[in-house]
Image (cartoon, rainbow over all chains, first blue to last red; front, side):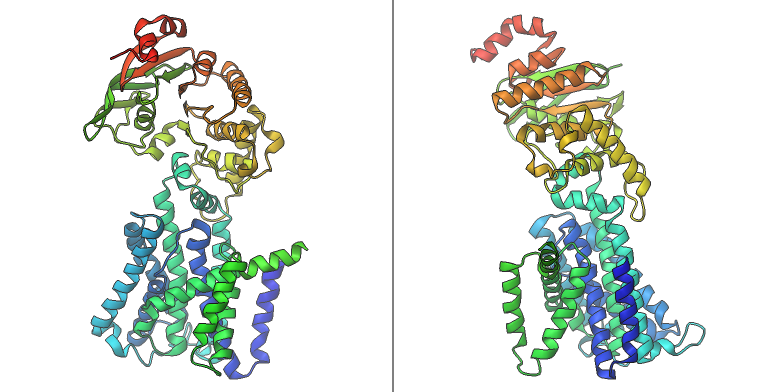
Length: 305
Length: 249
């Protein structure tokens, strides 16, 4: 808890000293961090590997974009509503996906992601098809304040979402519900035979994961001012899974670091070469081979020494 | 009224009749063993009782309630706890976390997603009591996967006990144990059954184990019941002897 507060204070003070472009990068990093952390809930704690987590992100982004474009609902509320919506949709998605287990489950999540991607291309009135939604505004409020629309204000809103989600996710994984998730991760058949309706637990954790992932997407829409089909594409699903693995699954903090690391590498390398993904791919392979427990695993081993 | 009652229970896999019109019952406080040679349908019968597979025909009644169509976790919630033929644990969790998670399944707030300190405290209290009854307190903090095979088998029993079951179902409790380990495990189990009024149904093919633990025996052969009664009567039964000698056709 002390660590969490220290990091929060540090992040809260950063806007005082950072140039605007760095603030933009940092805000994006925090959004990605929230996205990666949301995936860790299902991947790291219930071993439910999703290859389609972009569905959560894209759903959040398009929902929030539409709310902001068509209503006067204050920005923070629009973001929250889009996250909740994403979580509600996930109940249906998870209901179908949990009919399968293991690789088949992962394939179904991928299929759902690509299904939404295809829908986004055709449903012009809601998604703007291949043009996407452009000019997404940062609405005023609550109480008429324009603060959350400013660069600094939006950064604080993102930070609040990340920390709120982190505290929520951490409470969940430490709760009785979280203990059952660990049981499912280690031996689902046994968990079922103890009298837990494991499928309901899995549906619930997928819904939570999508809700927080949707929250991240919902922040991205007003951050970038647009939403397009790329936010639903499998490439993003793959990238966020890589962030989780590089950061360290089942740690919540690890994927946050993984996302920041990913964005930093992308930012630094893309100024030199278009093939930055190649380098990151190599880094990913090295992590999987030599540091399977990710950045958090490295940190833990250092502490143990 | 019997705690568990099977009426004409039948399971067919395609053309194979795995369980054939089995009718039997387990009275409260009884320790009963289902025995039979390999392929007699013991495990299939066990699956039908626990709800892992669905019956083709017939009924399973638990405490007078028909549970034939109820899923496995539902039957468990009614008070059936089971152990597996091949040890099933949470290997990376400590022994204490294993029993605690088992006990938590009996808590109305087992699904609570936030807070829950009281749920954990109660579950751990019950889990620790179960560990103590099986003499596992000294390994409580060790990861379950690192325990000796004998202790792992007993830990599984402790997990079932932590649920304070009304019916304890055991699938070959000494499966895979050495002669020495088997003797130790049987001692612990015999002590446990003697000191409690647990109702137990166990499936076992090791006759020595059966005659030490069970007060009642049901004999299966080719999916059907061929004998039922006290150990002495079953031992003397001619059909049973010929079935075990392989002469029963």
